[in-house]
Length: 387
Ligand SMILES: *Cc1c(COP(=O)(O)O)cnc(C)c1O
Image 1 (cartoon, rainbow, N blue to C red):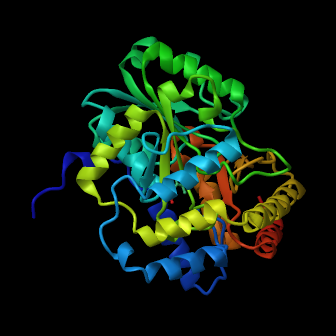
Image 2: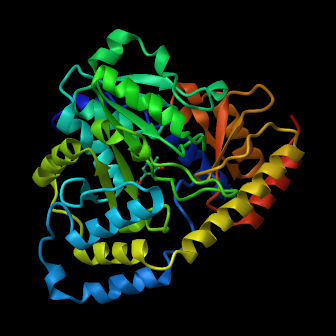
């Protein structure tokens, strides 16, 4: 066999493979494992969206190749939703691009703007697709540590000027996976200034903007003055409407960035099944009561998790968005050792923070993607551990 390409060799080892193996071993012993490691919603897609797909799937016009940039009606639904939700005006012809899930667009963007040796600014800890996309384009990653004392926001002033000058692109993600942190309009204003000063493209992954708690509503980066001159936002229906399997997302904002990404995609894919886009229109323009119900469900689970951890005497911040709890590892363990003990002695899976990057060490992530009663049971099991 021919050897695998260098770009694949450069990827760091997949730390979660170890957890997956241990999980299988523990299950094989007959333990009822409570998996708080799953990063996708467990709740079903709302029925009106499923019905829209069923009806649309029967239409022969959808059985042909879709348009590359997405159906005008879908892009219009996106533009109107952005206007309603964030007060951001988008031109559906030039500022909206349909994606096969936001992961695809996030990973492809560097191919359009990063040359070998260019720097990409990447949050650490973070969603691994940002660094993989940068490396696949031949870029170098400069990791921006997200520290608790900064509210898990990157310290832009700490990025060396020579690195910033070589940077072409910066990834951000708020509400954040894995830390559940949120960003303020003031932070975004600083990002726009930084991007102008160093002439770089900001790629904000706004995946979790609709999963928020306690009446807080996360802002759009694009609502910041001047943001559209320097950046784009990635979004999808995966988390908001429990549609991870459907693969439907979008990139909106700066027209040159949207056009560049579109050019890459024209050469590697042929768009999203139009029946899925029709379902997406039903999601964005239809009743939003299910999305509201999902928020309440995740909030209830969050409250059970936070109360359980506090009862254990473990430190935890109450998240305002996304569906994760990110907390410091207690008892001075490292995050892998801690996660291993929880799995082997309590049958509870949590994700070690170091799996999201070196600055994630000292933390662990709980995903609120199982029922409240399972989370409560996990917390009871943890009470019985002796440290
Ligand atoms: C789940 C997730 C994604 C993936 O989104 P898709 O639209 O399903 O591809 C992207 N970014 C973050 C931070 C995520 O957690």
